[in-house]
Length: 438
Image (cartoon, rainbow, N blue to C red; front, side, top):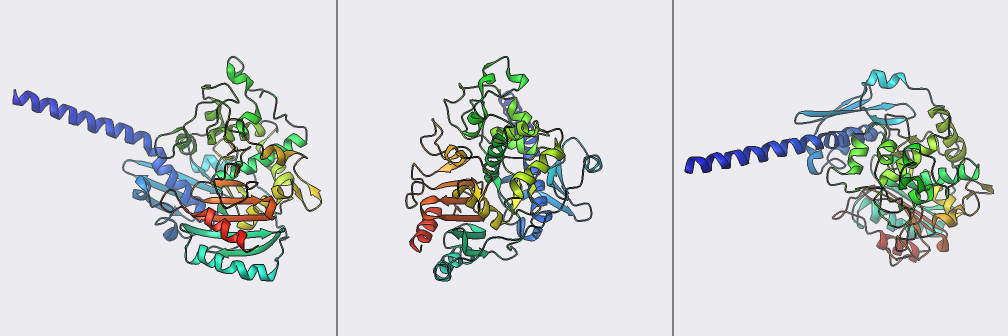
């Protein structure tokens, strides 16, 4: 009897170990892929030192146990954990992509050169008294981390001029930094420009052949931009979720999101989905004859007018920019982008976004309870109670933020590593203190 019980216990124990190993194996592309991709971008796009990146940006969960190798000659990073590995490769002008399904040589064969831009800086210094009054806040935020988190960059514009600017050690005004989900707001701008050029209609059902036999045929670009498409999606970053699989396993991220079944009638339920943005970006790419033509359009119609030199909108293996997450530009670039939305889609006297587009952007999605517009967050529900209700924002993972406050003529940019919940920056307190000095 005892022997039988022992056998059963051993069998259960062995099954648990086997099940755990099988589940862990499904996590391997996420564990190794996250480390390889983010370390490679930090090193080859942002120019940061791996010795600074690994103990800060990669020091969590299983990610911290990766063994990472930076190959400066081939511009790759390979990350290993237990029996698995992932490699990410940098391409000049494009940024970093996780290699899935191809080796580096085959991947580079599809490369075409991108022109280098060198636009002059057009942001000017603002009022000296205001700059002096905001200097203690900048020091408290970046140097002393009194607002919590680990900020890398801080820029404040008032009346379109710089009134505060500060950078962490190793970071400068020329350093391109990761957007995370602030890239969604840039995707918003690109959709607006293309709509203004007559290339698409955001209110019309999308002409996706695979959707025509079911309820997905009624989904519009507006539904996707307002996070109300009804497509099944799990945005939990803590497990083997849709967003993690998309970013770290899939070769065509937009196609992965496009393949999801419909759980709700379009336009009736709000829930956050990075997949929706990559689906939109893939749809936008389909309006052009080639990747090269699409990137040229983005540069000419969006990045060029904003004077954003050599942006890295990193693509997936299919060649489509990852509109949900992977844009690298400078803190001042993000500030100019915010200023364009504050100025109703104009840069100086030049209109970039069509008339009415910013109004559409800040109109609450019907099921969002006033907290979300179209790839922008809203403060109508007073998430930041000490900031004006008309504030809207671009928000990214780990504390990347652009706050736009029309009633105060204010744009605030904060970038860095400030993960929730224990190290997130007190953004409400920061905004309160900035506004108090205006």
